Image 1 (tube, one colour):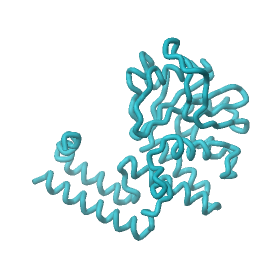
Image 2 (cartoon, rainbow, N blue to C red; image 1 turned 180 degrees about the vertical axis):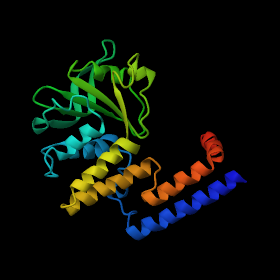
Image 3 (cartoon, rainbow, N blue to C red; image 1 turned 45 degrees about the vertical axis):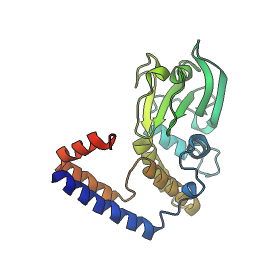
Image 4 (cartoon, rainbow, N blue to C red; image 1 turned 180 degrees about the horizontal axis):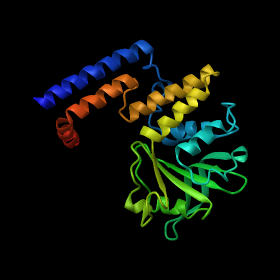
Length: 244
C-alpha cells in the first residue's frame, strides 16, 4: 500500500510538471526537435566548449570558464591563464597506442599559454574505450588534469582507468549536478543577453530531461520530501527499477 501510494502521489507531481512545461513552452526544444539530444560531440561537447571558450560567440570573455573551473574545484585555478585559454572539441593528442597507453582524441581540451591543460571525457551513453582515461592522464604529464563527465558522475570502467585512483589521478563530474549548477550560473551572467540566456535555459531543460529531473525546483523538492517520508518504499522501487 505504501508503494502504491508513493507511486500515485509521485505521478500526480509529474503530471503537474507536464502541464506546467506545456504552459511555459518548455516542450519546444531546439535540441530535441533536431534529434540532437544524445549526440555527445555534435551537441553536448560543442555547446559546452563554446561556453568555455573565452573568445566564443557569447561575448562574455572568460566569465563562463572561470565559473566552470570553480565548479569543478580545479586545483590549479590560481595559475591557469584564463585570458589566453583555448578550447577544442575532439582534440587529437597523438596516434592512439593502447600498449603504451598514449594518444587518442579528447572530447574537450582546454589549454592556456602556460601549457596547462584540462581534458574532459564526455559520456552520455557511449561505453569506455580501452585504456582511455589512462591515455589521457599520460598526456602532458604534471600540467594536465583529466575529468570524466557522465550523466550521474559515475566512475570510469576498469578497462579505461586501469589502476588509476578516482579523485587523485582523474576526477568524476556529472551533468546532474556539476553541469547544471554551472549552467545556471552562466544563465545569471547572461541576463542582459536574451538569446544567449534562453539558449542556455533550453540546454538546461535538455540536460534535466536526460538526467530524469523535474525542471520546476518546487516540484523537485516535493518529490524529495515524498521520498524522505516514504524512504523504505522508495528504496524497494529503486531496487526493482532495473528488473521492471
